[in-house]
Amino acid sequence: MLKDLKLFTELAEYLISEEKNNPVATPIDTSKLYETLDISLNENPTIDQDFIAALKGIIKSTPKTASTSFFNQLFGGRIDRATLGDLLAVMLNNSMYTYKVAGPQVGIEKTILHTICNMIGYPDTADGTFAPGGSMSNYMAVLMARDKYNPKARNEGISNKMTLYTSAASHYSIAKNASFIGVGRDQVRAIKTNDKGQMQAKDLDQQIAKDIDLGFQPFFVNATAGTTVLGAFDDVEQISKVCKKHDLWLHLDGAYCGAVIFSDDYKHLVKGIEHTNSFSVNAHKMLGTPLSCSIIVTKEKKHLHQSFSNDAEYLYQTNDDDFNLGKTSLQCGRRNDALKFWTLWKSIGHKGLKTIVNHQFNLAKFARDYINQHPDYTLYSFEDSISVCFNYKNIPANKLCTALYEDAQLMVGFGNFNNKEFVRMVTINSQLQEKDIVNFFTTIENFPI
Ligand SMILES: *Cc1c(COP(=O)(O)O)cnc(C)c1O
Image (tube, helix red, strand yellow):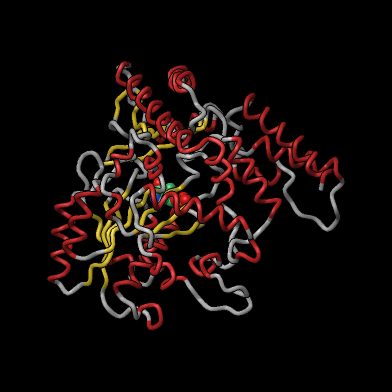
């Protein structure tokens, strides 16, 4: 192993130098991928020299998500202490289902979950788990809600018409999950948003009342902390009142920006979070841990058990169920996603997490100010968002982003809201500085299109 760890260090150093010197890897056209790189699998072994050369070729052409030119997605950058934790998790190679197999790693996971539950004002009955991404966290939430309001569903399946509610600007996983849980996509009600992309509590209330009249069984409302395009925050407090009135499960999808709970300066954006029934947050987005690191917590632990536990004698061979995490998990074998978040959090403290969160909002404000000061730009996003949406001159966003990518200038994506398409740059890489933001804009301005 030590020999390959040495090789690993060599390859990692190569990657880091590539990130610096070629921050946007030149993309390979899909039609040329297999002839350009040595990817094929063959009958015979590969000699070390060719093996290493193949790996370096692949590294060179792989998009550099930790570079200062990557603004394309809702993650980016590399925080050393978090990466260290993930590398260790790979070496340790535990599976999180039992205390017998994962030992103290279980305590690490539980400590993260309980600290978050405390921070958001959940009672001692709360608990949570790690899911393979924000979409799956949302899936767990809606499944718990289905089983709470339709206790027969778990064994008998669904026979009544259950409806769920989310804003038109929410993540697509809500509709997918409605299909996964047997409720069906047609039973998802997309509630209108205001011009800032926030779900309208009044429309929500009216739609629920209408569905009840029509004989449906409303059971679940999804609110979003950081919508995927605009980065908008739904008003949790107002929505929670509607949920209370009709006795519905309220989930807060904080995959993108739920990490504001770590900042005294921004946690007001999820005011009322203690009234939710469940909350999810992706540490691999704002907190910069390696993919993936998604957390779902729920106010009443019993719902996790009711929906996800299963007896299995071959697996559960010690009795302390509180430490046998498989009983509250979507999966059986489960990789250790907790350690990387713990190594980050342990090393920088709550204060360090707050600094990360605040820095991203500061960078976004800096970017908005830049746009407002330059008449060639039109701004589409709002305060308190780390999604900076804009158009440059009258160049269609789609065309601009694709040209910048193909010419290996910048990685940035586009989105739309209210029938307007725009560039969406995301200031989620907390290692970036103002000069990197300026560089982003000047690259666009100097780009011949
Ligand atoms: C990213 C995102 C998700 C999905 O998270 P994955 O980890 O990519 O599955 C869900 N909801 C919102 C609001 C998101 O931004």
